[in-house]
Amino acid sequence: MKNTSIMKKVISVCNAICTLFLFTFFLSSCVKDQCKGSYTYSYYTAVYETTAQVRSNIKSSAPQPIENPGKIVILNNFIFLNDVDKGVHVIDNSNPASPKNVAFISIPGNMDLAIKGNTLYADLYTDLVTLGISDPMNVVVKNYNRGVFPYRNYGYGFYGDTTKIITQWIRKDTTISQPCGGDQRVLYTTNNPAIYMAATPQSYSSSNAGSPIGQGGSMARFALVNNYLYTVDDNYLNVFNISHNIPTFSDKVLVDYHVETIYPFEDKLFIGSNNGMFIYDIQSSPESPVKSGEFTHARSCDPVIADGQYAFITLHSGTTCLGYNNELDVVKLNNFIDASLVKVYNLTSPQGLSKDGNILFICDGKDGLKIFNASDVSNLRLIKQIKNLETYDVIARNNVALVVAKDGLYQFDYSNTNNIHLLSKIGLSNK
Image (cartoon, rainbow, N blue to C red; front, side):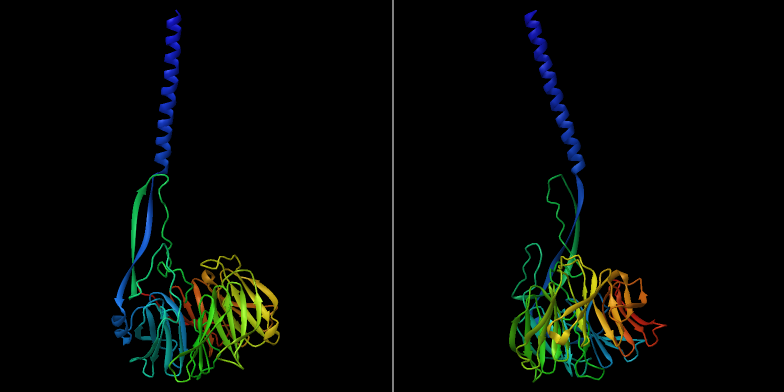
């Protein structure tokens, strides 16, 4: 009987162990099945050309469809529109109701541009290229300043080939199955493939119609004042003397962390960074600007414009800004020294802005274009909101607002604020 009792206990223990094993097996199988899934990875491969090949292709060519509109400069009857990382579209805007895309200038890595007279300045990755545009249909390369801009930052350990130039990115998508615990990271991608750099997309000036300096948008990283070209990168304000059209490096001034935009007004430069707006005086020493004032705010992206009495700053979250503010800050300049906040207006995702007299235009991202009566900065009144377009930057002059949007280039007539209407649109390619 004793042996029988022992045997029953052994069998009972074995049954328990087997039951536990089977339970664990089936449980792990269920968990494994639940953790299996399909993961889609998007990545880009770079296409290179030699420096000689790239330079030989920097010329006016047949017009190309617009794919990724960025910075913009207006000079006389022409619009020069940056296509991010590709080059510049030349658009005949003699009739804003019927603009014509007439030529394309291939400049790989281009994100910014500025124009004075018959000379166009543009970035080609780390280089500054100077082009003669007396005939926009037949531009001529005048000069290269090599290595004047920082190297672009790329994601996931990608490094550019310093002996060649990236001319395009080819996107590849792949879907794989992975068990639980696998590397499920998806390569971060944007409209600017795999590049971690504020874009760039607008060159802005307070010049009037007929000025030899092209007027651009508020997302600028290039600005022209008299005989100087000012550019900003992540931390610095760079100064080039262009008195003889060919840029000569003059000075580099430390501004702040993550500088984004620059706006010239009279003898001042308004520089926007993640942390605030900085005012630099260029009257006495244009070759070495001196900081004269600042206005700090919560971390956020912040294009800025000014009209002499006030600065208008849009803050938006997302991208590399890491902030959560989406607003318009109106700042009293107080002789450009002691800037003080007047009022904050909550918005959706504001970026570029422009002002013509008392009319203020704000690109509010997916919330469209918002147009305000700004005669009283403490009480902005919405005149009109143009919806169903995702806006990036705007230039308002001569009763026409030129708007860069995600899906193309728009022009609106605001000569009668009670009847603001669309004049024309140049859409993107279907690529």
